[in-house]
Image 1: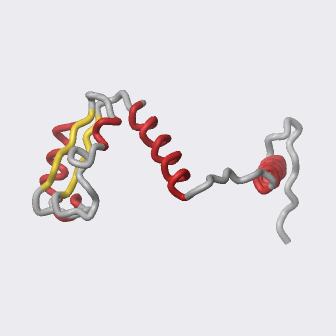
Image 2: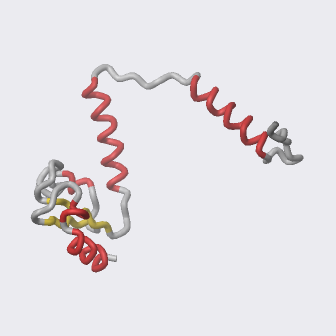
Length: 115
C-alpha cells in the first residue's frame, strides 16, 4: 500500500500540488475555445502572432537552411522581413531538412563560428 500524501502546513506539499493541478485542469476544461469564421482567418491570426514573436528577437540569431530541404528558404520567401537586422541565414549545399546529419562537420563548424 502506498503511503498517504500529506499536505504541508504552507500548502506547498505534494497533495497541494496535486489539488492545484486538478483545479487548473478543471478551469481549462470549462473555457470557451476561440473560434474563427474561416480556416484562413485562424491561420492569419497564428501567422501574425509568430511574426510578432520573430520581431521581438533581439539577440544575434543565425538560421540554418539546407538547400535541398522541402522547407522554403527564409531569405527567398519573405520571412526575413519579420526579423530584425541581427538575423542571418546560412544555406548548406547538398543538405536537406536535416542538414545537421547531411553536412555534420560543416554544420558544427558554422555553429562554433557563430557562437
